[in-house]
Image 1 (cartoon, rainbow, N blue to C red):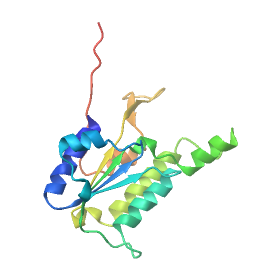
Image 2: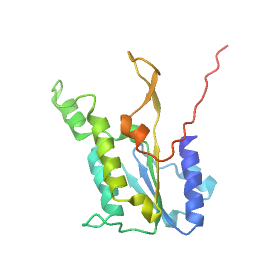
Image 3: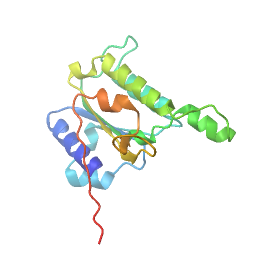
Length: 174
């Protein structure tokens, strides 16, 4: 439902004459859903996952901004990142390759996402009329106090966005 909702928003943005950037961190791009919703693929830029999260974040940044950090693409009305859970930091990949290295820690992804949001929001992307949808899955936070669920990406994901929509699903058991 999260992807379908985001693609429905993309159709509306395209109806206003703007381009949409769909950052697909969990390939393949959902082409059948996009077709059913009426997404115009001529007004769509699909970016697929790179080797690690920082590469994809840099690609998004350089697509939106020029070398001076000013908005370069005013024709882009929406950026969808589906999903931030799959933006894997380089240090985590390196750690996995080195098997047992202490190169990464639990805060690595949160710092990467926080830097990304700061970089994008700090450049006044929203003033150019571009919106961003970050799709994330809720996870169970084992051993924490308070709410047992959290979103991947740290506190920046909860506090930086201007609007947050949480879609929930209650599992029914017999």
